[in-house]
Image (cartoon, rainbow, N blue to C red; front, top):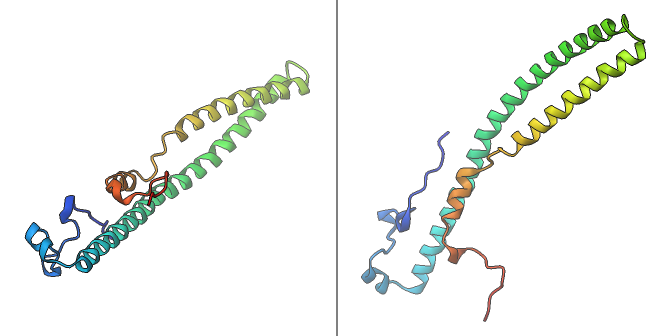
Length: 155
């Protein structure tokens, strides 16, 4: 699958056989209907390209995230099993020296500290999710005249 491409400037989406006027004399010779048709065709093409770019970018990032999630799931289960048996071993070791309830509480507190550190690291890493960077960049290049203004339209 190929990603959509975009040109820059006025020539994006222009095909010589489409008859789109680009010189001042050609524009002067064109009717308002022809010019409006060309503008709406160009806008339609631009919007389709933006949607296709967003779809391709979402698919690409989704595949990467899915593979990583599966690997993290497997690693997480393995880590859980190791943590479980190490915790039981520590609990049994401490049980030889002190009361069984106190030994279990000490192991639980250790796991609470580990969980807090992991949560802090996860929160920091979640801030680095990049999102749809290419789509956002290309949408920013759409001229301001085509963007809605929050103040409203004055007549």
